[in-house]
Length: 342
Image (cartoon, rainbow, N blue to C red):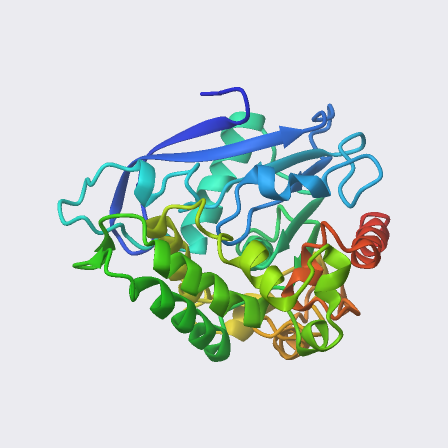
């Protein structure tokens, strides 16, 4: 099924990792470029927290990080983002008003079906992801090592660390403090909760140095309050609040080893990876900290190569999605060009 902006893969009834059956599951996606005859020029670019493909497709351009003239680029929208199956667009098939946990493992399983059933693709030149997208890239490389030639994990990790989990608890607490949250779900859009969530997020998404140096001035803001009000107060208001909770649950559950194949053994999961791996944490990222990737690096014992290259930026987590940060964009472009040349 297609519309003017994206296509939808109808996955049918899907049994989730939890055993819950998700009826009539739908994966929204957008493509750029042309699939070559060998079907080996594919880049998969999964979305991040709250993002839809039109939020992240700026990275796809002839002179940008991902080149659609050379590669066939697919952006699958993560479940819970309002385009793929989400609380906001899914009837309550479970009868209790509660949307089930959709794990990264579930997302990758449906994405793989999309590649094989819709495009006949069984090799990926690259899986590129930022934040929750980076966590998906790690899952892809471990779960399907025969398919993934390269993986770029940008400000992401193989599992949600306890520190990251606590950060998300703060975000979630700010959101659900709104009176619109009743009996485990939102019955209306939480205006105050959304603003509070944005203010909490603002302190984590950017670094101490960003605020110390008043780098927000270079982004066109006149004061710190102007930056918070215009950049963060409405940052999540365009999304359904129940969708945000669903994606927070996916994020907190994230652990590449949490499946039957690896039995919770992270070392075994990372040892399954055969791809060339590029780990690009933000040097000043507060919640996907470089130390997570540093700890993972020695466990990638069978990867064809591992490049650990923190983004040298004061923009914190935002350094990995630098639509307005020229130096960070150029750093990403060069590193991805080098990876694809291998």
